Image 1 (spheres, rainbow, N blue to C red):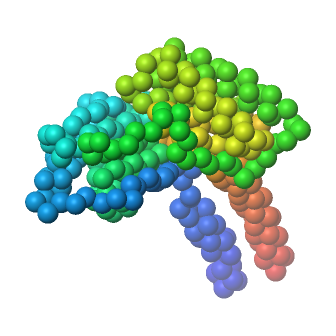
Image 2: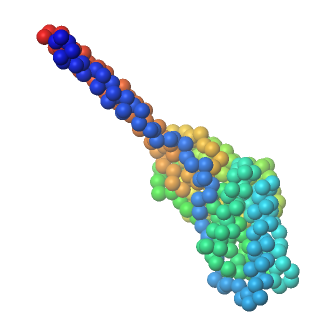
Image 3: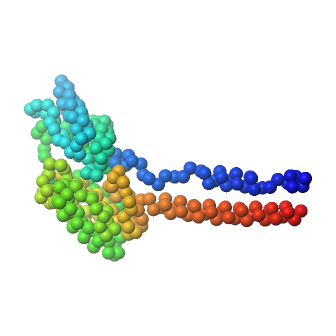
Length: 302
């Protein structure tokens, strides 16, 4: 009678533990949409003078052709319209994206370009995984080596031997992008690198462009542990991970470089948190069981 008069605390204890242990966990994997993150935009200052709508029609047709081609190609260049009202455009996807990811990336660009630039006579919008460029006939051309955009990480590793490692890694990327016919990505001495040239650039010119971009990175980013340099005809990206380059999916190959930490890979913090959380959970469980045993022992003494 006395036993049932004092209910054991164990059922309530395990109910509370179950509620804690089965709370949803934060996923480690990054979103697969990382390749659609906006990097930069470039919009001409002049807009179309288009009373008849001919430019708008050509631009819409151009966008349609580019998006359609992205289902089966990672680079495509074409012209819509004729004569002085023609518009030439192209898209390019990062070399490590699948055809599906390439299409998903490029299909966002027409609406985004119109939103960011309006109906200007030339525009370029760069996402993490792809970019789109168009210009009307007669638009002033720029050098393929002209720098369009740069970003350098906030973390620095001066005096740690990082710059020597980085420069050696840069040499590997410079030769790799030539042998890779315009695209190359690798990990070398804890430095993750990616380089790509526009699809119609020859191997030799690609090597020169990437070399110029890497020289810019050395000057512009100094001892920064990550950076991205975009020239008109190529771009490079690098990230330094002292504890080793983490495994990465194609969707995050370049999107994480500007925000990488000099102390760990992008998921290390979450991994450590979950490991420590698991250890704390086990310790808490042991303490609760010991407490329950003491309660039962006192109960038996009665």
